[in-house]
Length: 221
Length: 184
Figure 1 (tube, each protein chain N blue to C red):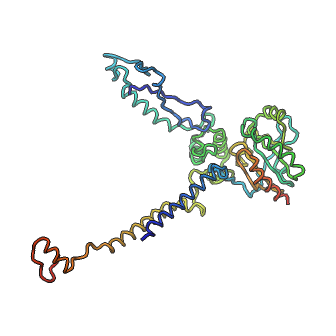
Figure 2 (cartoon, chains in turn yellow, brown):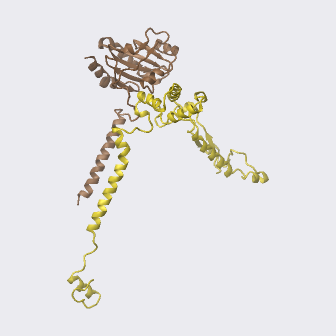
Figure 3 (cartoon, each protein chain N blue to C red):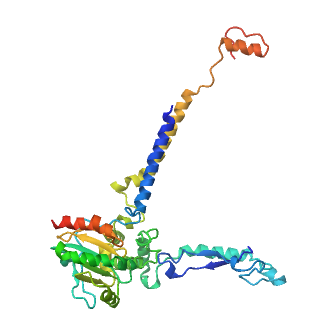
């Protein structure tokens, strides 16, 4: 933990696609400091004060680390939605959030428009809210966007003839693999019945080798 | 017995050939995995009516897209790829009259004065320009970035859409042949 870690939050302009939630980078700054002159994010404490704060001589205490980690946990909960976009009616706003979480940002393609900072995502968020205010049902508002951008905007692909393979392919593959293994295992158990019993000549030879009299006829090995 | 080894090897070869094909296609630009298919192909152009940006004579509405084969370009002065494809559009504009098609522009989420400044210096390839300042008409068209280029038939039906800057190859291999076909 002596290594100096710095939280760097990239500027908005450098990632037009990013969400406010993501994009936190941990950057090591040690190369800048000459060896032996360790720099500290938090001034080192000694003695009683150090004990009180649970850290000692420049070592960033586990509490600080834990606090930072917990703070990081809270970040993904934020969306890109700006305060001025939020509807006054909380019920309507909740419905809008539900819809925009299902819609893909076409600029970033791996984010929902609820998460994305792209200008188009903002436009679409506003559009969805406008439709809801105009009295659209959730389905109608979704359909409005799908009519313009196609099924691709839906993060959850719809179940239709062209997507059957997508939806059921993995299950089919699993079943096929299971069937294949089962058939193979079945065949193996038929083929491998253990070594064949010794015949007369082999038994005599074995007996000679271990210095015993050959067993009488029909003796099992 | 040999079959035990040949079948998996054969399957692997097929898989490998698929990968190589996809990689080559992506690298050569023939295939773009992030391209979004337009939901409007085969559908009539959405209803809209836009004024011309300040300083330009003709605005653009859905009615203007009928009666002639149309190439519609979605562009903006703030979009670098639009500047890259601009010379190609100027060349295309020269062919328009003789080629029997019209080249129109949808100025997407732009500022009139910035557009005017750019075109004053670089030239205006479009016979009509619609100023979609809010981007709302663009959304109706399924626009998700600039530039985009649409080809419409004489009835104003959307036949083709390309998202991204035009290239010489694209014009030669896809757009010009398509326009020629639609003109017949």
